[in-house]
Image (cartoon, rainbow, N blue to C red; front, side, top):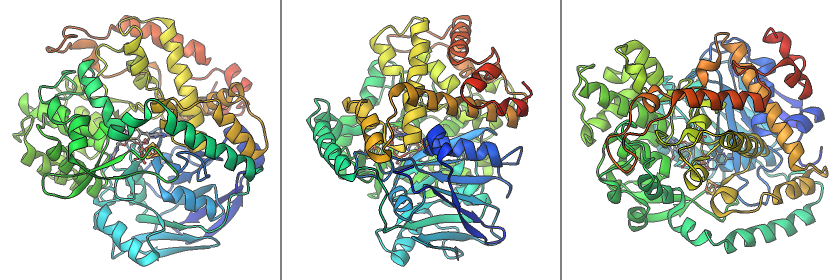
Length: 602
Ligand code: PTT
Ligand code: SF4
């Protein structure tokens, strides 16, 4: 189909074989790209393997909209069987690597096997080589990025891991461009397990679109429309950090390991403080909403801040200033640790220390102690060894009811929204296809603006609708969703873009169906890889049901378990899944996934 390179580059690090493969047109039609391609490949090729063994594969996947001359299109999905959760895992990263992969003539790069020695991949159009990375191994992501840019030129797309990925710490992510990060469910550890330090991409070709002139015309109008939106000026001032103040006002800020929803030092680290500290701005390719806000941290180093990082490394740990948080964020980036999971792990340790469950003394707001913990977690040493596999595993090891305040779903740590009074958002976390990430259904703003306390079916429908658009469409077309989410850029643009690119008209109904297919296959994947997988995996952490916050206007409120249970049942009904959250035979057949039933014994 037009708009796709139609090619996958397969690199086997065990035997050094590199091959180009055709992507069947049926896969483009049924799975669109990005996450869709990733789950199809994992379903077909990665069965019942240890995620950190050489049998696992890591997929760098783009969609028809990636790398195009269109707003916010420089995105890529990185997916694998997750070493953190044991199920499907992926992340979405904004990077020049996306553009270069497409221009080099590929939609997907798939890496399998394991190199004997540290290596990195260099791909430049037709050329693809596995190169020695011994000089890079052990270096942090900033040093490695510098070195690779020196070697291959600044205009390269570079994806890399830090020392934590090398050390197989399962909360390790993949970094690019000194501050873009993607692959929360341990994608950095998967690269580490393959001795793969980095991927460097350079492409000089063009994407074979159906109608480039139309696309140019659309792009011009679309960029203008975005700039003209009422929300645009404030977005340009604060980016994702505009959410910080809103969260505090609405008691959703993750505070003291999600015990509270409001923070006494919030005025020291909100979007207005960011504006004062900002020294530079950057972002993903092709974007006129550049949301990478760079500040100087407390030691004068540059750090890129986003709301999630600040929420999890700030109030969640009781830090008192944004400059301190910036330093912790910079450390997470250097080590290649996912900042959300890192904040959750450290919050868990602080609470464990307060409760006397570990020997180490680390109190809320202990800035020096937190830096030490980051190093220990990155190395898997000292008390950090407890966190090698994230908070779920740490709480299982610790026992003493600590699972009640280990903030995760399916093993992935909860991102920065406290949901004690947001049952709809709690359901979004519970049913997210990778574990507790907000990316598939950030319903919280809509929920707070409508009726945050109710448990009605409309909320469940909203979760499904958002998952279809965000988790289905944006992750598979593989473009940034923020123009739509943050400045109300019209959704009706996207079928038009797709048609100009592929020459094939797909309306939203069909795009929803593709999203449903992807979701059903991801569900089936969880079930096949974890036979015990059932309804109990779709619940948010115990804390939101059992322990109400003691501060703020919503003190005393918690999620009602029975009512949550009802919402979950509605959710399964809408999706056509059984009451254990497994797609029924009829649903699989309807979505063209009939073959899948056999492998999950339906
Ligand atoms: C994403 C998650 C997020 S989501 C943030 S901040 W956010 C954290 N950023 C980290 C970081 O930085 N350093 C670090 N060491 N760890 C980090 N972990 C966290 O990772 C990001 C933007 C943002 S900023 C968001 S919401 C949107 N996410 C999108 C998405 O998921 N899909 C999509 N189609 N478009 C999106 N647009 C926005 O992209 P994960 P990025 Mg990221 C320093 O990948 O695994 O999903 O985790 O991609 O290039 O950094 O852009 O308030
Ligand atoms: Fe990247 Fe931000 Fe632009 Fe999205 S809005 S493409 S995350 S810079």
